[in-house]
Length: 416
Image (tube, rainbow, N blue to C red; front, side):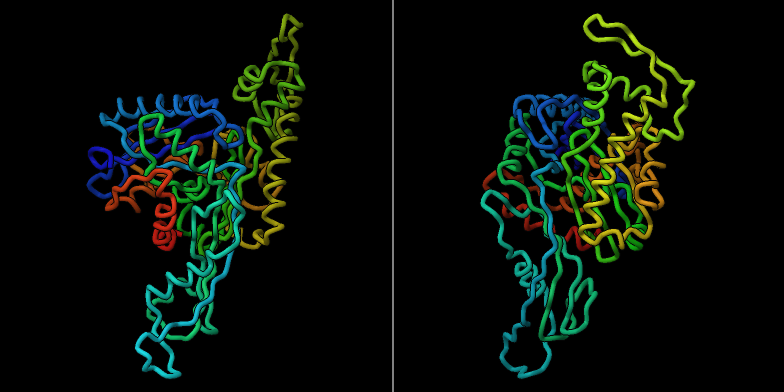
């Protein structure tokens, strides 16, 4: 563990690496003691394509954390996402074992070992070579004919069924993250799927119980998670994000992507109905070409078209998987892409649901820096670390992935 019991969350994104350090205060509330970010160029759509460039970005972010928190970073909890992620729901069924052989036909009391066995049964799905399960998230159980149970331990029955949500990843991608963090001089403590981390950071208990969808719009990917009273119902990672908007602007205006990104951040708006025609700005021509004037309405049309498409792709995925019925409390937006003006009314139009921005809640922010949707994942990672790692200091490497990914069932049962 890091010195002083400090937890470090590492969000390795397509456009930047974000690191946050926190320690428990006297009320066991996490006190943020360091926030840093560095430009990232070694990922494409959430997947590492340049280990050296990514490790340098990680090292830069960790150097700043070490300086602000006064520690040496040894272990980090890392977010994982990208187009290599695939999730599915699965079911397992077992008979309750009568170890004493004395019960005859009587019903038997369900034990923790029975729950472990039925979850193992649910995990027995055929995966292609090169893929592995990274999360096994229990949703609900059924004992004989009684379903909708969160915890069947202590109940009596002869048949136990479990419904679980499985998250899988490409083994090579996971190992590349471990190698990259090691090259940066640190060790991976745990992996957490990024939308799960974001949900832990920004959703209220009421939203989780009523049913809610969270959409995290990053630079290279857009991730989504749906939760109901039974926990995680669905997760997905789509290979589209804010970088597609930047590329669109660059292509339409015939400027560099650096110029396009600067214009997007300074003048961007993604809901044309709220843009202002009298707000005009200059666009410098590339390669000595003539400058031009552009108003916010025309500029917003470029951005709205792509953001509308991304949100509709998310909605289509949720609809195909029967998830829209769970969104009773609406949608929560996180990630850097959710900061574009106009994103709330645009999302409300696409989903016809209430929408809010999700900023981290429940932290003592001594830095005054994390009150923003872009820090949802990193703060969720330290919240996970604090709740799950306090008594477990084992590090992992590529040879111990299996043991890592079987240790997190209890966290999801207690928090989702």
